[in-house]
Length: 242
Image (cartoon, rainbow, N blue to C red; front, side, top):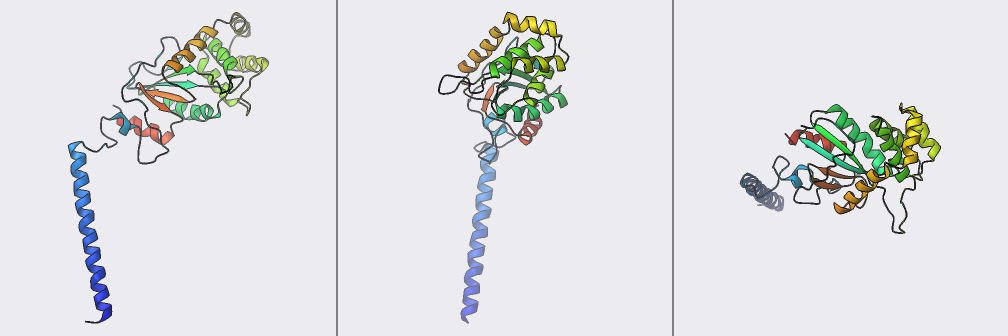
């Protein structure tokens, strides 16, 4: 037998052994999935529902659902929607801005499937100051617009007008409010009264109690997810949650 034939025979044996190994491994993994020992995306496990093999995709940080909804914070969508989303936002946060475009389209396109609620969380930095200086004033303005049924329009306008510093001048906030159809006199009275401060403070306090440290932070059917959720993951959630 020539040397070339010997090498070829060794290669063939190695390939055959490798194929046998793959077949056995695949059979074992399939068996484990059927027995429920391995989480899959279509299982009832929420960790599996909201995560895949990609490490950068968001996963829930709590193993049991918590109550994150507010009775007074602005919301949209059907109260009977199977997917209930509470999002803690910061109007000066660029990540909140990026996510807003995704979650708003999702909610508007699926009103019977997705119920969305916004809660304000003006992030505090390590120095004890607002990380985005205009976030709190913007939240006050958004809630005042909400008094006239214009919260979501104001929400979108604030994110669209966001600057790199995360600041909002009082005149700009008023301009945005008028631009979305808010009555100027009523808006001025609301801002001057400071009545929305209590609602914003309640959101922040609730966020702290729920372990929120940054924005955006989501609670999807009570399960906390830190950071932005990509559009493709939302589509998976839509398909999986009945």
